[in-house]
Image 1 (cartoon, rainbow, N blue to C red):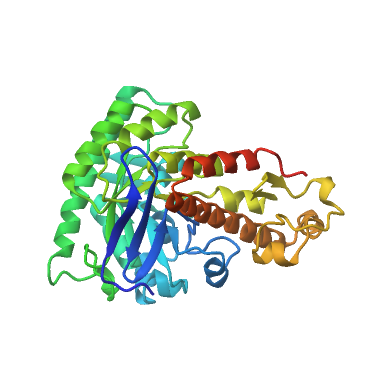
Image 2 (image 1 turned 45 degrees about the horizontal axis):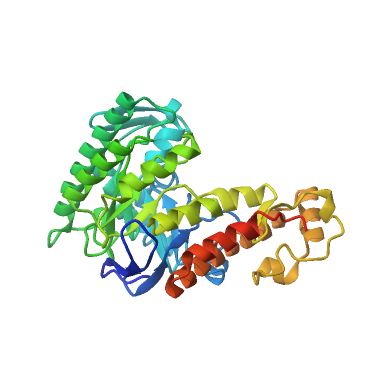
Length: 395
């Protein structure tokens, strides 16, 4: 398990407005950045175990506070020794606060000035969560990086609606910062007796979330106010939620321009390979997205030659691996023809093998990005990677 002696970020190279090479320390665990976090919403990256996640190179994964709060419950996880022990994961864990679920499960919730009331999508029971309660839940989970509660504005949205949501996000961030400071005082106990990790900055990091939709000035204003409160890192939320893709870069650049160089920047939920290449070029350090795992379970995998739809009849007698350049467990042993067969007959192994490959590809992409940054040739690498991935995977 990562040691509980704090989370810190080391910037190795980079300049304002450009790509950055860094290292995120979680105790003694070093996470080289830029990094991609596989999504383990319910304390599992679907179809995979911890051993294979380590084998493909993952060091930091994401779990979701909302879903774990509902089932099996944060108190139960605390009694079982915390999330790391519960899921037998020796790497780092970032827990999302549930703000995106507030967006995606809109029919079940009501946003109030002091918090969120919602009906469980599982059994209809009512719950009320405040910014402070969200931090207490994450403390019981014992995650390494914890997120403040925010309001993710559905897109497209008017300026007035987005500004209202930004103001509420900022008020909740201020309350979260105050609660975090109180929890970090000497003698403050971990709620629920989780033990090894304290709720404050001594054992974990607290990230704020910049909102503001597609409005650059709102993004700037939100980022400035969050920076004035002082957080361990800053996430960029509210992207990939229905906004026009062409509106994203200006809003992203506006927020990044206001963030301190010495703190990590995390782009939430945006994750095609091309999106990652673009965002790294602007100075983003951390990424997560369900795309590689969700698509893999539906028979679409990512390769260095672009997306491959494994169910296509063209692969029915293809003896080659998914990606001849990939050393992952799926590509070392299994053919395209075999994976197509597994998908055709509905075998669960199909989703597992496809997921192993797609996440391995993402880790290879991030490793290539870091190597290019270290060599001072990121622009060339990004251009070459895009060219390779647009040639098509059918060849």
